[in-house]
Image 1 (cartoon, rainbow, N blue to C red):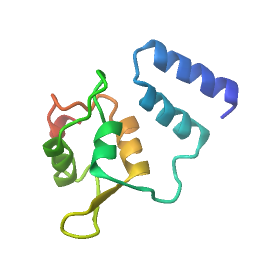
Image 2 (image 1 turned 90 degrees about the horizontal axis):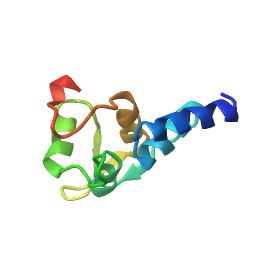
Image 3 (image 1 turned 30 degrees about the vertical axis):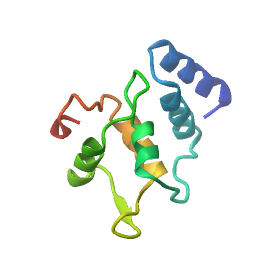
Image 4 (image 1 turned 60 degrees about the vertical axis):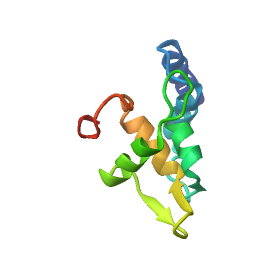
Length: 108
């Protein structure tokens, strides 16, 4: 997409109250840079990306329920080290924009 079109889409998203992290993800998707090599991130980073509109991260049990429902894949490096693919987390955020902890996983 052209840069002017991507800027217009981002401006409209910001005007509708989309969080800044989500706007960055939207820009990546529109520019075609979302299908890159997997980037491992911690659970804390994944929870911050999927965070709520008020800026708080989602809870650990909610992140685990996403994995259990098959919406997100986790990589176990050991019993205590779990990583998530940053691109997959961002795609989950874009594809399910209404995804919030108050809603059930089945409705997402």
